[in-house]
Image 1: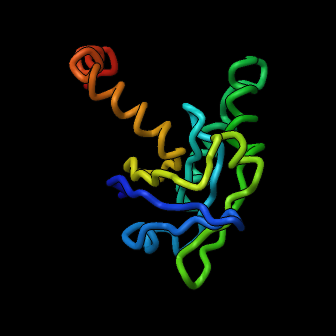
Image 2: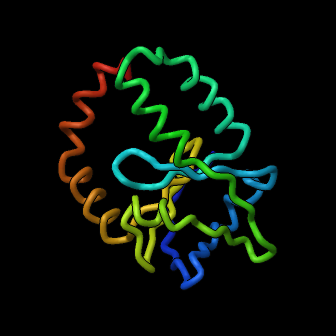
Length: 143
């Protein structure tokens, strides 16, 4: 399980240090892809394979299903963690998320989200300011 917020820096070679407490869960491999809300999602390889299987079951005759499949799968790439615990993020994903040198690395249960630091702060403030409204709407999801 991934939880917590961590501030990190992307270096000039597009290397990002993965928080130490997340590394063991990624030791068997990991995949990065475009996430929703214009952030990046990193999954352990096994979890990403399960997600990809679910996506592959979506009806290709529906435009939204095809679009979501393309978003999640065409942009995905496997990552290797080096001896220093860093991964190299592909340029096209950095551009997609609008990432600069300062990033927020956040654990969100089954995935890690990578956000431009300022964009994360803005999103988090909005969610904190609207938390009661968000909570009230969770009953529609059976929560």
